[in-house]
Length: 486
Image 1 (cartoon, helix red, strand yellow):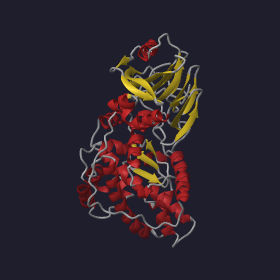
Image 2 (cartoon, rainbow, N blue to C red; image 1 turned 90 degrees about the vertical axis):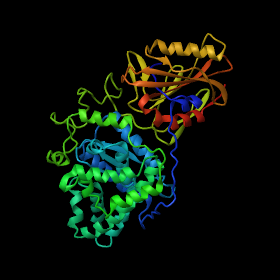
Image 3 (tube, helix red, strand yellow; image 1 turned 180 degrees about the horizontal axis):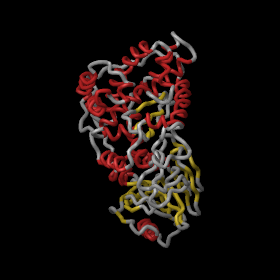
Image 4 (spheres, one colour; image 1 turned 60 degrees about the vertical axis):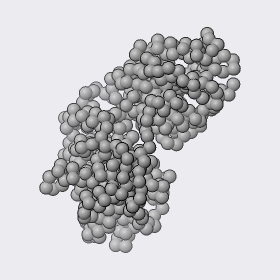
């Protein structure tokens, strides 16, 4: 067993993590109506997946787990806040960071979303960055990409869909110029302005639902104007101003009235400073001049997706000491697992990693073998151990002492609390640790119950401290699904 981080289960979990719901007033919000669209939902997903494949072939993605996880957490929080009438279960929202200095972001049909590093560095706070993401995923939720393609079919077939994808990509490759080449650019511009206003209004509502201040969406346009100079940044060139944008977004924000909104966070400040410590990113124009935009062999002058503080990092299956590797955010879809004496549901993007006395569920990049020992940074471990004690409290003490033998920084963060594990009386305790793998502060939650034969059944949840809020819902769902049979 090894190092951990986690949120505590039950009341322990709630004590460690607070994602409080932000009450908002929806009186007076503008009703947004999605445009007519003859295409199926599956078509959005198909087109988006095809375009995403091309984007990731041409654009240099930033392969840094800390930055990627942070942006993904913000994006998924916003995606969950999309009003129910615009939620499409077929869409799988994803959020990736492009290592380019242009102030830009875009989203493809189906939910494939990309945020340039330059946008994160330009934003004045987390709310402004979240505003751009909320705007982009509003285009997805309203299905603007395929709706615009349907309009194009009135004028030209076949290439119209490709042209629309070019417009969505906002400058990726040579595809973006095809809209103008069709001779119907003004027609698209008219409708894109209409769709821009819809995305502004729905984006403001999504922000409010997620606990952000929609005024920051309006403020971001001012920031973009200041950063872009007379020509304006790339994002604004592909997102034309419908007119009075600053005013109508602020008016919508006034109607939404979010209490205690999220504006800036320590995580945003840390990520922004972290990015600024790296070697400056190239512009898309510079990347384009370099030929293949995401080559297998990197130009040593521009290690596009490497953390400059760890230039020797590699893509091994297991993360190494001091190196960062992307850890995918837990899927909201759960799959069932049947063990010898328990059943549990875990995110479907977590792997099951059996051991002699239990099984660990963790995503790729979150586990490793170190000096012959298995360790993990994100996930849940469940198992059974034989102890010398007959009481639950004494047996749990024994388990924690065993954990501490391999984790010298492991410390108890509070006293024991009564819990329930698989409908059984249980004990829960919170601990902290310094990960030997990443060097990051961890939260470790341990919940235990006694089996009829006197063995101790345990669940250990692990997560880095600065990611604990984002794992609360996942850990509670996993804990709530657990049933123990003996």
